[in-house]
Amino acid sequence: MKKITVLSGAGVSAESGIKTFRDSDGLWEEYRVEDVASIEGWHRNKQLVLDFYNARRKALQNAQPNDAHKIIAELEKNFEVCVVTQNVDNLHERAGSTKIIHLHGELTKARSVKDEFTSFEIGYNDIHLGDKAPDGGQMRPFIVWFGESVPELGRAAREVESADILIIIGTSLNVYPAAGLVHYTKPGCKIYLIDPQPMNLRMENFMQIQEKATVGMKKLKEELFK
Image (cartoon, rainbow, N blue to C red; front, side, top):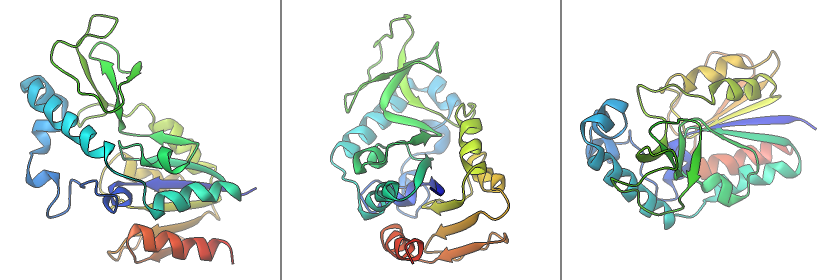
């Protein structure tokens, strides 16, 4: 059975109503990245950061997986599939994908400020100042912020290395270190990029489907099953 690794970003969830950060009407227009998505921002204003992610959790509760999420999940019927996602939402899980690596953490989990590895399921509930983990540390979102290490990066790189097919969808490949994962592909690996904007990776076996995520995944499904 061939192995597919999917590298997904915010564009996959945009059609489910999850705002992306980098689009013209995205979250960066309302908030500075330094204030809500960096460790320095957390130290400056914990309440602002908690409010921001509490609101993201509420929005996620009302969102539903779209056809792109569902088709990615369906590929497991015919391929070994691992999804490596930059997204912190749970839409891949809810669509039915079973092997997912969250590079940037998970919105429906929290952790102690004292322990970056142990997480707690909180669903769509808020985190408040004063909420303590069992180790006595303040609870914070289980999110990898700018200025923090990416613990899952090594595992993600191994999934890319072993892939026969790499699907890149919903990501502009501008966010490092995640963007560097494409360079871990083995010789002969087929690379498919789904993005409405023209891009050229200048790599062998590269093909772009210049469509938004849902349309692009439908076209790619036809290509894979030819």
